[in-house]
Every structure is written in structure tokens, then in C-alpha cells.
Length: 271
Image 1 (cartoon, rainbow, N blue to C red):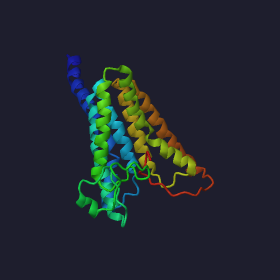
Image 2: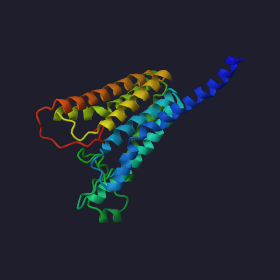
Image 3: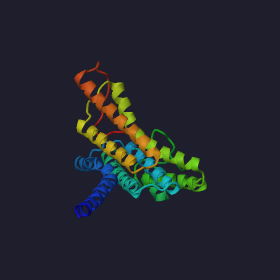
Image 4: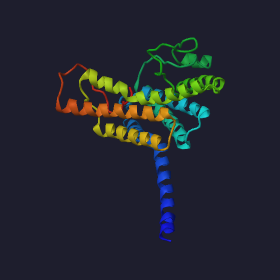
């Protein structure tokens, strides 16, 4: 009797914990971006956030969704990608509006050509169709250009995935590229810290948030037997976070020879 009563209590608790873990998995990744979004909106200054972070996360999560069609993994991981894509688009929209409003007399750049002659008259001349100048890639003047670029990437990769969906090698490679791209998010920050011999401007709290979030995510992957790519790249991401934490400690307690550099903001993990 006692065993059945205990089981009656444990089952709902386990279910509640499972729901909580799934909810944390879905929304946990976007939590660090909420204060950044609010801060950019309040200050009307987007210099502390690199939009290349949005590019990396959009590519990673679009590829992850396409991977789902070839190898069905847990729904919370799929919803996590959808929520992250929406969040990155919102960040891009805000950053683009703020940057354009703060820049005067700049040459407008766009992903696609002008839609009409009227638009061409109002704005400075643009390139014939696509602006492939790497100096201005992902630095366009309107949010719609970013949307067009994301839709183009999604359409092309989606079509290729459709053609090769029966190939297990392609599907597994696609899954690896998706999670490996996200795992590399902190490497540019790690290299920048090493190059400058300093972590000036970085927030230890933010790095701890990265580490705790990535650790939770990796444990979730392992316990729920997610595809092996998720677990391997999750561990890699945790190692990168730990390396950044070690840099914070070493450069704080054992200052290196000052290097000529511009202080990098705390919110630019991944670029």
C-alpha cells in the first residue's frame, strides 16, 4: 500500500520535472538576450551586440530544423530552434532600426535590388541585384533585407535537403553542421581575448550564464538520448565556455602586457 501511494506521488512529480526541463530547454537559450534587447531599446545603442551572433544562430537553427525532417528528435529541441529563430529576427529588427537611426549620410545597402524606380530615387544607387560585397554583407539598411537573405538560405538548403533526404550520410552531416555551428559561437570571443591578452569589458555573470546554460543543455541531450551530434558539440561548447572563464581568471589575477585594442562588450559572444 505504501509503495503504491509513494508511486502515486512520484509519477506526477517526475512528470512535472520533465515538463520543467523541457520548458527550460525551449526558452532557456533566449533568456540571455532579453536583457540585451531591453538595454538596446532603452539606450538606442546597439554597439554592444554583434548582429553576426544572429547570423550564426539563424544558420545553426535553420539547419537543425531541416535535420529534424531526416531524423526526428525530441519536440522541445525543435521548438527551441523555432523560438531562437524568432528571437534572433527580433534582435536583428531592433539593431537595424537603431543603427540606421544613429547613422547619418550613409550609403544605403540592401540584399536585393530596389523594388521600384521611386525607391531608387529616394535612396542612393544600389548594386544591380545582390550586394555580395563582403564588407557590407549582413550590414544592410532594412530589416526586410535580412528576412530575404534568411528566406533565400532556407529555401536553398531546404531544397537540397529534400533532394538528399534519403541519404543517411547527408542527414547526419547536416545534423553535425547544425550543432557544430552553434558550438563554435564562443570561439571568436575566446580568440579575441587571447589576442588582446585581456577580458576587459566582459561580464563574468554573462559568461557564467553561458556556461550554466550550455551545461544544462548538454546534460539534457545526454539524458534524453538526443542524436550523438548534439551531445558531442554540446560538450565542445561547454569546454569553450570553461576556457573563456579561465581567461577571465588568468587575465584578472595575472595581467598580461597591455595590447592596443578596443574594449569589447560583454554581450558579443560569438563575434
